[in-house]
Image (cartoon, rainbow, N blue to C red; front, side):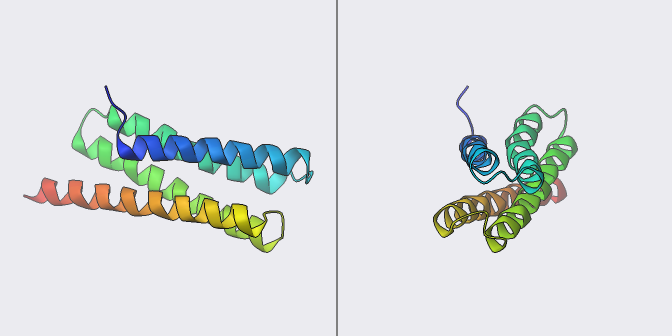
Length: 119
């Protein structure tokens, strides 16, 4: 089965998050904020995959909503790491752009599914 767009984008984003986490922990010696960033950033895709195997529409929407919450939390950690100068502008901009795209896609998926439930 072919991966969905959101599954691919969230997986690729998780790989980017892991790459940045390795840099933050080894080069910058930042462990606390970066660990939160790692957890939130990699859990987006995990929740998407769970949602794609959901037992019902309601379960699917719930999992996608959790993925959205994790994406929003990740956005917060990106901003905090950037403002505290642990992330350079290049990585901050790249992460932010990808994260915002994932947030938009997840919001669209959730909205579409909720509309279909009503109709």
